[in-house]
Length: 262
Ligand code: FPP
Image 1: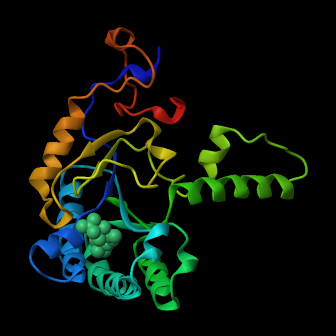
Image 2: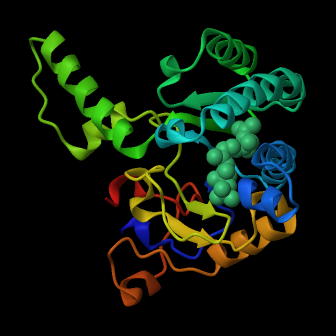
C-alpha cells in the first residue's frame, strides 16, 4: 500500500524559512535597513531554539540569495560582516546545544574570512546529532538544479562503466540538499507570496505558509501557528482525498515519504 497515504501527520521533519521583512521593519522605525538585519539575527536564534524544542529535525534558512548581490554595496558588505560576527558569536552555543550546522549554496563566492568561518563552524558541529541547521547562503534554486545536473554529468563522464541517464533521482542525489529529509513546510514571512528562487526543486510537494509578520516580529507563537496549519493539511502528492482515506501502516511513522512522490 502506498506510503503517501499517511497524510494527516505530525510535526514537520524539515522546515525551510524565507526570512523576509528586515528592511521594512527598520524603516517603520525610521532606522537604517541594517538595523533590521541585526534584529533579524536575534530572531533567527529564537526560531532555531523553538524548532529544536518542537522536535523539528532539519531547519533550512534563506540567509543570502544569489540575487542579493544586487543590493547596495554597503548593505551587502554589512551583511557579510554580520554573518561572520553571528557565526563567531553563535557557533559555540549551537555546538553546546548539539546543533549540526551546514551551509548550502555557492560558498566560494564569499570572501576568505567568511568562507573560513563557515568551514570552521561546519567542522566544529559535524558530529552533532540534534537539530540540523542549514544556512542557504549565496543560494539560488536554479543554481542548485544546474550544479546538480552538471555534477551528475561529470560523474557519468568519469565513470566509463556505468552511464546513467539523467533522472529525477539522479538530480536529487546531486542537489545540495541531498543529505536532508524531504521538505515538508516552507514558511515565508514579510507578507510576500512567492518562493523567490529558494528550494524550488525541493518545494515541489512542500506545504507553503505565508505570514504577514516581518521577520523580526515573527516569533515562536507564529511558528506554532504555521505548524498547526501544516498539521491540519492533507498532503495528497497528486492522489485523491478518497485514496488517502484508506488506512495504511506508516512503518517508520514518518508521514513523510515524498522521496517517491515526485
Ligand atoms: C530579508 O529582509 C533578509 C535578508 C535579505 C538576509 C538577511 C537575513 C538575516 C540578517 C537573518 C539572519 C540570518 C542568519 C543566518 C544569521 P529584507 O532586507 O529583504 O527585508 P525587506 O523585504 O523589508 O526589504
